[in-house]
Image (tube, rainbow, N blue to C red; front, side, top):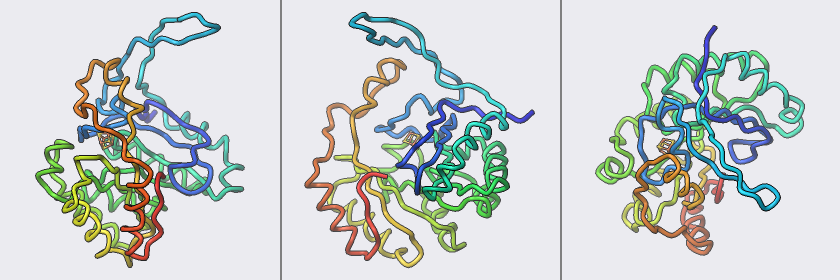
Length: 266
Ligand code: SF4
């Protein structure tokens, strides 16, 4: 039986595409973004960490494992439980990660089964995948939530560990094929908020506005910081502050000059 390695399934998600959705978080990512909110997703291997919870004023220690191999039918059984909510809200299923294309065969099967069941499908992707893989899943993917992190190649390489040439060319490939694409830009102070880099991001979006659905600006937040210590991973971000509301609002106005709908958050 075919399996997929996942680290979470979130039901009733409202920030991963339209309507009420179930988001399947798949293990493995070829990038190493400094600000990653899901560092437990990066390795294909499962990771077990110490956790501590408070219950009735008492501290309870335990272990938590991120990552398990589950069969595709098991995933779909969970996803299909909320079909009625999807129908009522215009929602569906989102595959996220990590980078779901790291498990291309499982992803393709899950997308196909979802479409066979009449679900709206979204893929949350870094864009760092093979073009022929994008080509194969195009007909089963209703919406791409496509990350744009840096346009400057050196900055992208420095802060994610990979070149962005493939990512930018895959974005253009999808747009030219008529895919529905929302660009999602994580707003990370000091990494892509310098004026010249913001201008490059804005120009990249503006030149493609006729083919794009929307833009989402995702402010960096520090809630994942404690995960790095628990996972014994190096936290690269230092004490970078979250962008404040007025900065995000200014940025929204700047991107709205493209005429596109621009949201803060997903
Ligand atoms: S692409 Fe996403 S999951 Fe992968 S390292 Fe970057 S932020 Fe984390």
